[in-house]
Image (tube, rainbow, N blue to C red; front, top):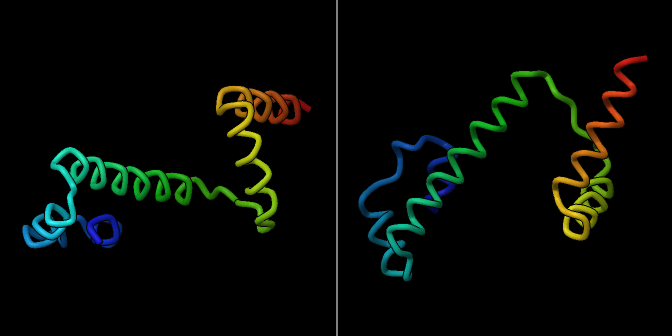
Length: 91
């Protein structure tokens, strides 16, 4: 509930929302992190949208990349991606 409100407008999060999260067992740190992560995702999404990036439509590509990242790690997968795109941009 809190993350969804942050996504729409951070000012929509109320003291009642925070109290409800606490009743469900959330700590202040967990509530803070929820707000921070939701806000960061909103910012990143706006950033890439503003750059006019395109995303593949094939969901299978995302599932396969997720498996590779889980197996090989972000650093390895990103390095391979960047190396491939740097080579393509140079030609």
